[in-house]
Image (cartoon, rainbow, N blue to C red; front, side, top):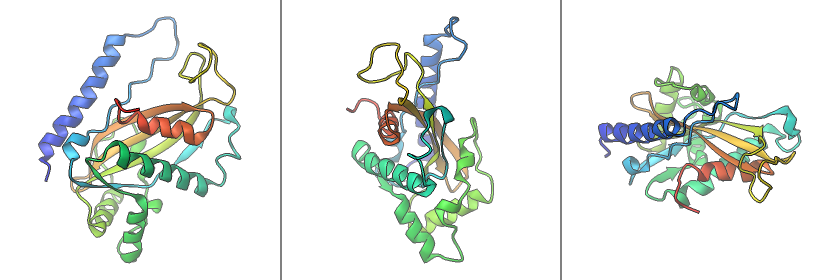
Amino acid sequence: MTNPLEFKYLVRRAWCAGVLLVLACGANPDTDDAAPAPTAPLPTAGLAGQRVSVFPLTLVAAEDSLHWEQRLAPRSASLAQADSVIAELLPGRAPEVTWVPPDELRRAARRGAGIAVAPDQMGTSLLRAPGMTDVPDPLRSQMRTLTALAGTGRYALVPAALVFRKAKAGEGGRGRAEGAASAGLATAELTVVMVDVRLGKVGFQTIARGEGDDPWTALARAVKALTPGLP
């Protein structure tokens, strides 16, 4: 079993690396908006060999300017597609961890009907709040009960929110002229947290970003940003 102190050290090191990168880049006085913080890589070294629950996404939204109402409707289908993209990419990009996908958590909730809350009905989206360190009840007890029924370890990966925003000129539109943003090019912002379900603590939080002409290409690139160094 991973030493929780070691896990905290790895998370802190990843967070500090992101902070130092931001400080090194400095602020751009010619822009009104501050540059987004870099995506911190998943701290998988401290989780190697463990079974880590992956909770389903419960919040997806898009800016009106994208006109993606039809692409993201119905909401249940969009959430299911997002779960599928995340569950498909994680095992191949971080095989050192045994990722337990949302479907297994749902089955565990059905087996424990009357005891466990279905993961899709939990308020995991509140974990998107910046700087959150403690998981509030009843979410804390709900996560602890469900992961115990699923037979997973003490850590859970929670995609807390997925937001699509219109890409700004100069952002990473692959294959496009520099400084030009397509009307259909969007940035997916995936807020990801790692929770110690036994202690009810948030040990890791980051926003992964990826660009694409459709929601799922953008999301896939955001998930890939969590494991840098791979194609």
